[in-house]
Image 1 (tube, rainbow, N blue to C red):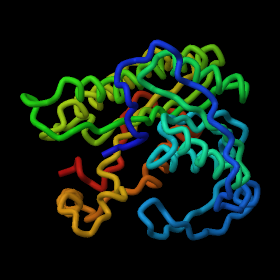
Image 2: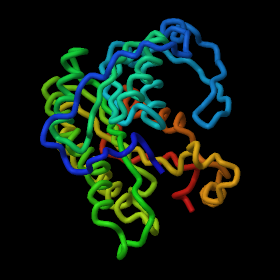
Image 3: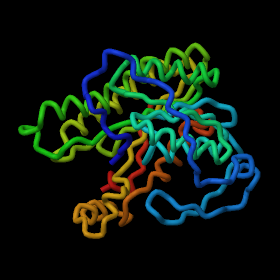
Image 4: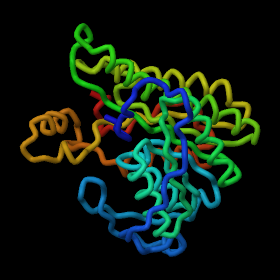
Length: 309
């Protein structure tokens, strides 16, 4: 199940704009290999993934070189994996998140690796903040070529007849309205430029039900429908819009060995494991790339066979 930045303290849309550049990070960051070195190297390398395991990575040819990308919920999880993937291919990335410290750490990591990145504090439940995120990206990088609307929250687990109204409002405001607010200001800029690619992060639950998660399921169904509608509206304007539906993705909480929920979720997947954020990022990067030039208005699963059952 897709997860992104932590929920805002106030679920209601703010009156004032909340988008602002994050503080510059001054600490020591772990990565030392430059993006140029990464692109030049065609040999596979080993990388530690978000689950703590090693994975072989083949460097590509910098297919996003010079393109301007905006990724929300990019301080951690899937959003961070996407930001890393795009930066590795040469994109200039705005790391947008409600978590200022997390956004700055993530942007600092990308910069230390040789990429161009800026951290931005954004509250996706605030339409003014969504608008300012677009202005910041175009003002900083001169364009808006790639967007990943990823920020989201999960909400509590309880039956529909008992679900808290405040929890419903918070999940819908973040997971559905947050995507709409982003598209509302991203698409006119892309249409005016005659180019652009957007990926909206939905979920495996974008077409399925899941007992105890009415708000999350409703929001993700909405994201899939919104994606298809916007794609039809902007297909002739050079803008491609698609959605990704992650299955259940491994998290630090689920990696606790004594967590029975993790065992249950693993058993739901024919591949016998949970997905990683990096695997979601790979599919996302493909959909944003020119290799997917005829992919429009579609919903793509990365779920280890969950939906095939």
